[in-house]
Image (cartoon, rainbow, N blue to C red):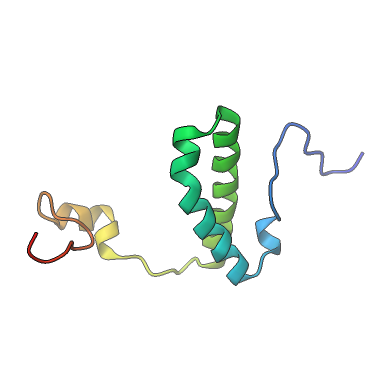
Length: 95
C-alpha cells in the first residue's frame, strides 16, 4: 500500500499545485461563479465537494500570493471606519 491512501476523500479536478497561474485563476473564477447554485440546489455531497475544491484552489492561490494586495476597506479596521450603510465599492452615483 502506498502513502497516498485517499479512500473516503473526494478529489475532483487536477491537483491545484499542478495548475499554472492562468489555469488556477480560471478554476477559481469558475468555482466562485457556480457557488450560489451549489449552495441553493446541490445535494449535501455536492456542496461538500464544492467546499473542498474551493478550499484547495483558494489555498493554492494564497500559497502562491502571500503578499497579495489587500484593500483597506476589506479589513476589520477598514469596516469599522466606514459609515453605517456605506459599501466597500461605491454604487452608481445618484442612488
